[in-house]
Length: 158
Image 1 (spheres, rainbow, N blue to C red):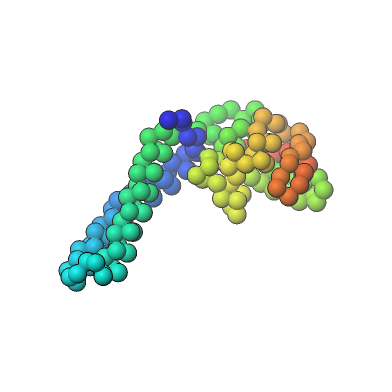
Image 2 (cartoon, rainbow, N blue to C red):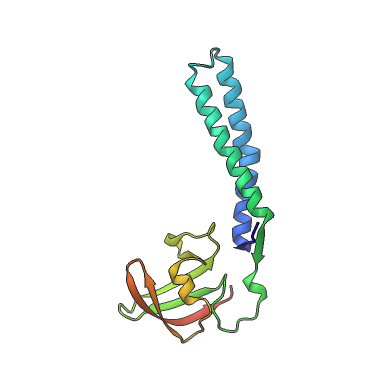
């Protein structure tokens, strides 16, 4: 299986979710199944079937997270010398040339991406267009909304 790039924070969040699933969710679901079983006839017991379905989702997510953590490649950007080049994990501030809007993005792994928090996937069109560029470069990026030109004004390794 190929390595999954992830920031230090991304790995922490996955480990926290895994811990919560194993120590909180799993016991809660097991208790719900036991309680539903106590109600008798399982064929027509909606609570039992719902709890079993929940158990399936929970166990599936646990396996998914464990698989990712087994193949994770943690990239700690804070331990690298900032040479002004945009790479995985950097925080990049750009100006949209057409609108003069200043936007700051952090380039993260697929599992960490959250566009509302300006955490963009390394595989997104914007990140692919920015990676390898340097501070003061101008870059044209094809986005779903059309072609956009950005000026890179800050590259941080934080």
